[in-house]
Image (cartoon, rainbow, N blue to C red):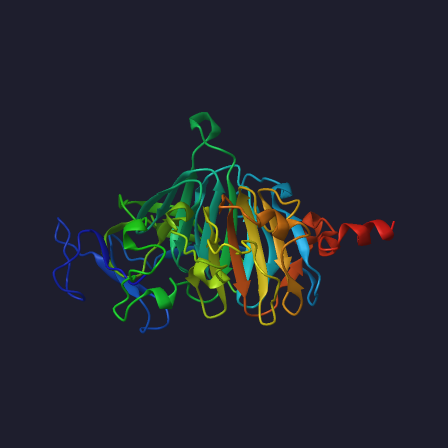
Length: 398
């Protein structure tokens, strides 16, 4: 995050002594990625952050791949993924390659019985249903419907979901785990990192950590750490949320899809205008309610296009996705690279003369082919690849 932020107390100069009220010391930690070249923050702990008491069991969390190579377009019924009590157990990995794991999740309970750290990947959580608070060692971020939560790798966190008794919905999450750092699109930033005037969102829209929790506690604190696809149970001797202050550029943050301002034009705009995040291996785009093209002969529906160099995944959130037939909230479609796709039969014609769309969706375009998991096949409708057939061709085969 090319934006400076600070919470709590920090010393006047970095890498100098920082005493507590009884004459002892707080302990400095540099938290960053890409060696010492990427963005980083300096944290100040009540206790040394290195105190491990026990290393318990471990288990493989790698997605179970069912189809490695395919050109089959698929529709996955995401809301049919079974809700589970545990936050991590509820994750259902659907698509993966060496750069990314794409999952849906429906946790019934908050992540409160242990602390979690993904040491493999940045996590981008999109909140489709539910609300609550992301609690991290660098502060708290309230969230609700339509929020992206970007959690850098190595960040220790818990999540409190609002219960149905407090007006909360059953949480439904769309999760992208990236083995590359996730950034805002480079073309929207100037050379200082500030979002420019043509960007579809700006720093004012960010949800930054607040309400820093500082726990001066010793005992047994269970931490689950994901590393190389394996989940390790580790017992820490001190409370993981013991930071008294921090500052820097590396921290979790949020952005509401409802604050994404669409870029429109006289004729149909290409998908990059919807881009919200980027990595070296994929991009994330937001399709939001917007006015259609205003050329008198414009075709609002997207043109047919071939994904020669990327696989396209669209997660449908709400509204009527105007280029598709038979799509509902929670559906997820995969359009593999190498074959064309486009509006379903009748969609182009329906779009003519329309003034706006109220669709809401998230798209992930990967630059390497995606593999399909065993869990994904359980949610696959099995017939989506035939959905572009003209009605008379379908009738002739019966």
